[in-house]
Image (cartoon, rainbow, N blue to C red; front, side, top):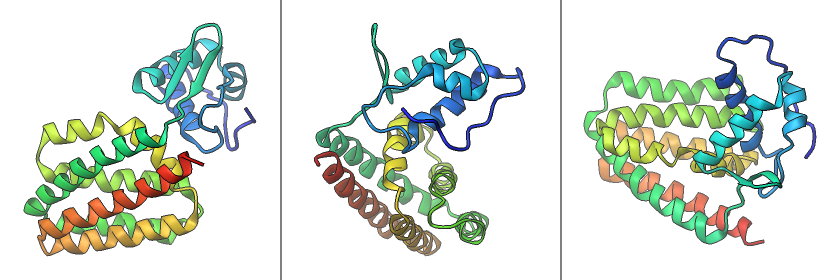
Length: 223
């Protein structure tokens, strides 16, 4: 496992465990750590300037979240999903997220449309298509707006219960500039459908986006 780029030491003890968890999560989900690779606790602790204890606690939480596998006497490993597992995850996402945008179309407002457009505009003004981590955060913020618009707490809970696994796949998918560009275009089409209050159209757009990502990720996993 190589040294991770852009890692800075943690210089405050306020909310130390949560801060370490967020940093370790970012490292594990990044493309710097290959699927199935062992995670070097000692190296990460040294890079963050903390003891191994909060790093080990963070990895334990990530194991509970489903993105790390801990093998007794061997250590922690990044989850490696099979093609079949990816198909299952993405099919569930396709159904749930399609329903979410259909419900959101009923509750859309001018303010929410402006917010969705601003998120994409800000990314294109301030970042590049190779800034994969920034786009992943933009993507997350975009869909949080839609989750809120659905006005369905149970549906939102179901989607967010899969968020760690989804993030694992999302990071892998948004690793090439052409896919970031395609995603931006798809999200602009989604905004247009929501602006028309076209729930059926918005649902089909979102399902198609998830389906396309699933095809790529499944094919990659089977190489």
